[in-house]
Amino acid sequence: MSRQQQRDAVRAALAATPKERGTVEQERAGFELFGTSRPLADGVRAEEVTLGGRPAVRLRGDDQSRTVLLYLHGGGYVVGSARTGARLASALVARTGGTGYSLDYRLAPEHRFPAPVEDALAAYRELLRTTAPGDILVAGDSAGGGLAVALLVAVREAGLPQPAAAAVFSPWTDVTVSGDSVRTRAAADPLFDAAALRWYADHYAPTAEAARAASPIFADLSGLAPLLVQVGADELLLDDAVRLAARAAAGEVEVTLEVGPGLPHVYQLNFGALDDADDALDRAGAFLARRLPATVAA
Image (cartoon, one colour):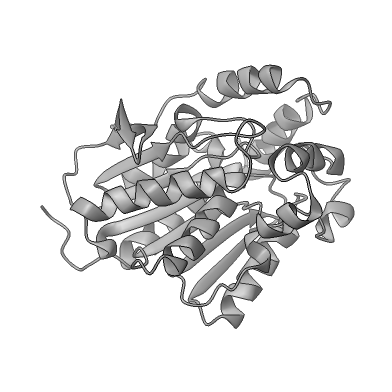
């Protein structure tokens, strides 16, 4: 199958996804089924643990280096779990080695902003008790990508050391839903429309003040860890990623932006079936690994 045929198959599958939102419970059940229906990366094993007072999935391969990855799942802050985040986390662990943790942070509307940020920071604090910050990596997709950036800001504000690096995939960084691509990519995005984004935003940060505070795109991004941002060109959140990279660069953060032509939201999830996804994860793994200490063997 050619790359274009692979892309067409992924787009067709996403386009078949219902656009109308159900109840929170229905959305969570559907997302859980989708997010756990495909296997982890080859050679990576999972077990349920607790991190920072929250459930988590610990991921390990054969490599026993001291590297630790904290992964934050997507789902608009309303759906998703440590289990749905484990697949992409496992793909990174397979490339960076060490141990990964996919965190089950609290979800809205029961727990609105800033609950997920508090949970991510608590998990990071616990990792720092046993792991040097230079051995810690952070990553996330969609809302989890935005949360990863918010975590880096919270780490700085708490006076804690930054991790070695972070990678975010299609990050949702603007909960006010004000990016131009929400309009300009509406016909191209096979998964989301503006109403869907606002459904999630209204559950997580229902006031204008809360939505802005929950959007790391509006935060001071200076002093953050090196950052890799990957996004598909055919998604509503394109501007969330582009503006994030620009804001980070303005804050003198070492940042790399990759825009995948013809690719949709979090296309990296399709590793093993989409060559673009495998290539992107290879680059992400290399970006993260290059910022670890030269020797990471235990």
